[in-house]
Length: 478
Image 1 (tube, rainbow, N blue to C red):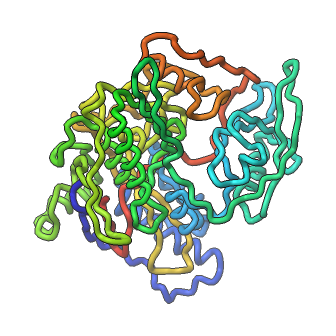
Image 2 (image 1 turned 120 degrees about the vertical axis):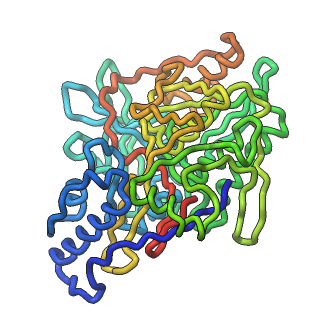
Image 3 (image 1 turned 120 degrees about the horizontal axis):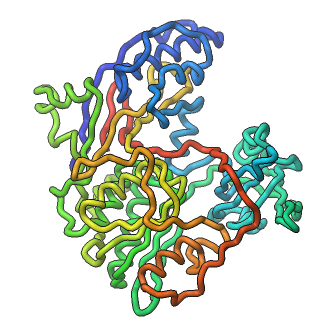
């Protein structure tokens, strides 16, 4: 991968740090001006911003007035530290499992939660909150469309634990069953490399990786997660896999640098001059990147990213680790996708498509072909807000970025939750292995239909591609 490109863009100085910001209206006015001035510099659609108007309304409400109608992904957060940790898989209080909410029926407002997977090292699995369990009550209260936001806040708030009541259908009706108490894990560090294994089916060696978000480390700059992913592909290479299944069904994105590293482990004929992606910015950036000033101070092309032949590590000691590439052992790659598959996940798929057959199994992906940066206020410690504006659009080697509505899978398969991830009977994995072997040599996945789950209820922002790391009046493109 090319060297990091450092460039300086002077941001507007719009308020003195000595200004009195002791009341909420004054602070909101300051934050809203800070939002507008940064958006006018950074935002991909900055020419579509409305004219500036001073405002004392809540910054999250004000931010909504700045968003261009085509933008589904720019987001604002009331705690910079919390969102920064979240991007690295670190949570102050973690319930120990991932979940998805659904409308119970179109005829009522009740909501049902499905446990997608439990997290290693947490109490959730021991307590029974494992993949395939359904719950309708949190702390004894039925979940509904009106109250679900308040109830699921118990999963991550400051309380030590919460209760959840499991439910199962009986004669067409939901019946409440066991209630368990889940103790939350403080400062939990989730590893994106969730599961890896090699199957031998009909004399074919099949590598399987479940990768749940793109993060290089916990924020300690060791790149330990990227290195662990590299070790996984090193094992796959050593074991001589001829087929590969990459499970991204719950992966809503993350660091672009990690996406480049994954792509580099998968592309055939890996080379340092091979294009991973092209990048398009707003006019501010485009003009600056093309300026003599920038070219005198920086090496490399800020409009293109290349595959990486090495992973450059600086902590705890400087080292250059060769990328473990399995691309030449493969004729195709099977990607398992879902409604959460977004951003950096889609970038990997899009960037590999010109080089190798990519077969998608599961559900339609989110459709995020744009990238963000995380921005916080380093000039005023009273401003805890942070935001992630869309600042670029990316394209593959063939200059294609034509999936704003998501990638449609080659094989549409429901995620039925009826078997553990990695179980060859699990619906998406089962379909991939059957495609590889060419015959129904496995025990088929039996579709479990415990209920007619209707509209999914999105409870988390999906689709993060973090391409920059903001510094004081500058940022680094990774």
